[in-house]
Amino acid sequence: RQVVGILGSVFLLSWVLGLILLAAVPLVGLMTFAFRRKLRRAQTSNRVQINRESGYLSEAAQNIITVKNLNKERYIGGKYAAAATGAFKALDGVNVINGFFSAAMQIMQATVIGLIVVFAVNSDSLVGITAGSLAAAIALAANVFRPLAPLSDAIQEPQAASAGALPHNRWPL
Image (cartoon, rainbow, N blue to C red; front, side):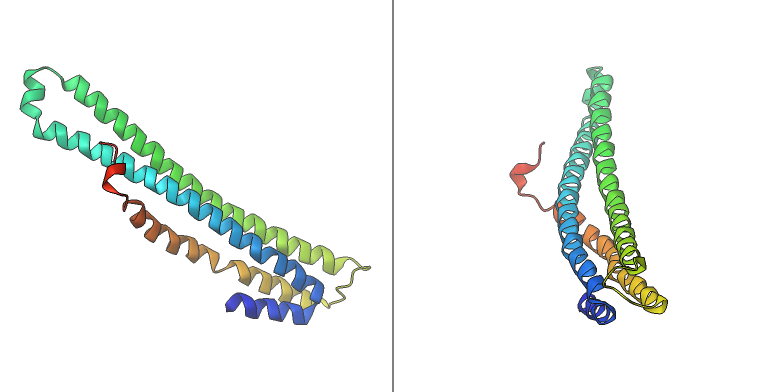
């Protein structure tokens, strides 16, 4: 609802600026959808790696006497180290995707505001608005992107939880 109200306000200021903003809204939706899918895959991979790491640690703890008697400390340590490295890489993947989403939204916001300014400043354009209306249009365009930061945080928590809800036969232990 908030986006519709902002679009309506910008259309009242200038139909050209409204079209620019209207074109940006589906792009924001598509980017959010794409990042959500990538984030879910990365979080699922992270959960699998954490499960693998926990399994090796649990196995070593339960069988510590056998491991010691057979002199297999390095073998078990190597398995755990490899699992821990995989878990760190998977977590890095989640963090990279989160960082790219925020940066992509900021770049898109700057691009839309830049287009609004370019169209408004051009003397031959159809925009024809005052400096005050231009400032209002820029503020409204920024407000379209404002709910996306909390949205990415709100998406991350449920997706992290649902990433662990895989069928039992998909866990690689």
